[in-house]
Amino acid sequence: MSDKSNFHFGYLLPTRGVVVQAKGGAPETKPIFTLASSAESLGLDSVWLGDSVLAKPRLESFTTWAAILAGTKRVHVGTAVMLAALRHPVMLAQSLATLDCIFPGRVLPGLGVGRPDLKIEFETLGVPLNERARRFSETVEIVKLLMKEPKVSFSGKHFSLNDVELEPRPATPGGPPIWISSNLVESGLRRVARFSDGWITNSITVDLYRQCWEKIMAYAEEVNRAEIVAKIPQCLYVTMNINPDGKKAEKECGDFLSKYYHKSFEEIRNQLLVIVGDGAQVEEQLRAYADAGARVFVVRFAGGSQEEQLENFVSELMPRFK
Image (cartoon, rainbow, N blue to C red; front, side, top):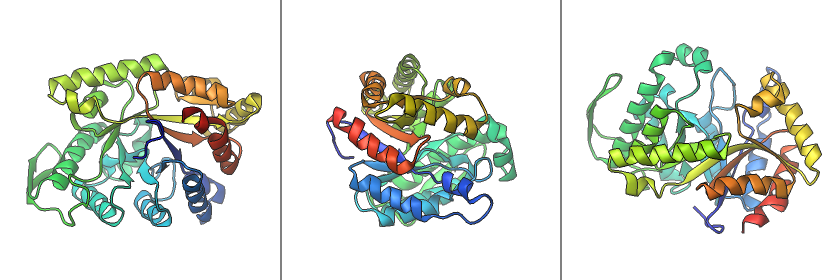
């Protein structure tokens, strides 16, 4: 990871947006690669992809991931977040190891359990919704073992392996770092403490963020990982509209999200971390999270054009963090 005074800035590509715009037809994918190249040339540190098959259809993650890595040279490319329980752990490990072989050091898998409202997606793909968390934990454990150890045996509730050898071996020792998402959910925070090489959250207040981190560290003490976990990247995923005209930012973001989620902007802000305003307003809110430990900011732009938002972000905000 590059070091801009110890801050890292990432941009979530609109891989769902291009599917929505296609209105049932084949999406135009060129904007995704143009935006990834723009983010790289503008000095951002990473670009990111969402993941969904049926609930919120978007471009398939692994094929798009590889294509974006091939079309860029410097930026890390990650997932925020991939629904790991939808993949068999051996296949997931082989895919991640292959990406790491082709693009060593630039692969950042962010993994998550998925929300209860994804029931149709999980169950259509053969994963009962009430099993997804346990499957997720076993999947992460198996993936990390396969990329670290030459031969792996594992016996769990959902998966069993007997002397499995993963090839190709990842270029990065132990495989690419795996970041795990969780808000204030006890089981999720335990997983972060036990397995994660990085933590992703969209905690809607700084107080909730601090509570999560305190719990993660307490759980890390229980599994003798406190020294390791204390150093992992803390990543804040934030929906944003930034504009020199703060009122315009508020309106654009509110109109976009209300239409997207079919809810009032107020309801959405009670469920998601949304930051709007001019550079100074956005900086003030991000600084509060930075004071609590966040050093990686992954930004999803809502409202206005993606190109304009990228340019505003780079001109209005990034210089304030140098």
